Length: 130
Image 1 (cartoon, rainbow, N blue to C red):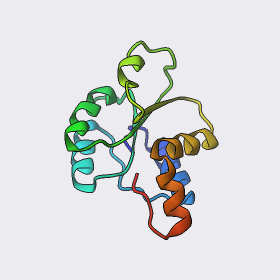
Image 2: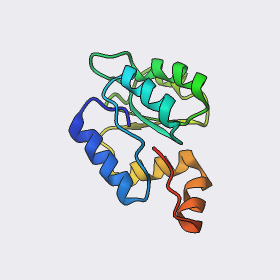
Image 3: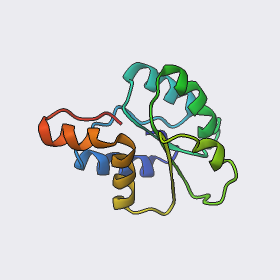
C-alpha cells in the first residue's frame, strides 16, 4: 500500500487483512515504495495517485514495471483527470475515486487479481500479498 495519509493506509490495510489478504507493507512515498516492492514482490500495489512531497504514483508505475508485471489499483479524490487515460492502458491497472466504499475497494482488488484470490483463499491457507 502506497499512501501518504497514515489513517487511510491503516484503514485499507485492516480491511484487506480481514478479507484474508497479507499486507507486504505500507510506504508513504515513492522511494520507500520502490524499495518495498523490490524486496517483497507483492501480487498487487494499491497506490494513492497523488502523493504529497513525492513523485506521482503514475510515475512510479514505470519503475515498478521493470521489477515485474504487478497490477496497480490507483486511489484518488480526483475523478476527472486526463492523465487517467494514460495510466489505465492495460487490464492490470484500475482506478477508484474517493470516497469509495469498503465493498468497492475489495471488489477492485479481487477483479485485478482475477480468480487467483478466490482460488487461493478457498483452496488453501496461502495469502496473497498486497
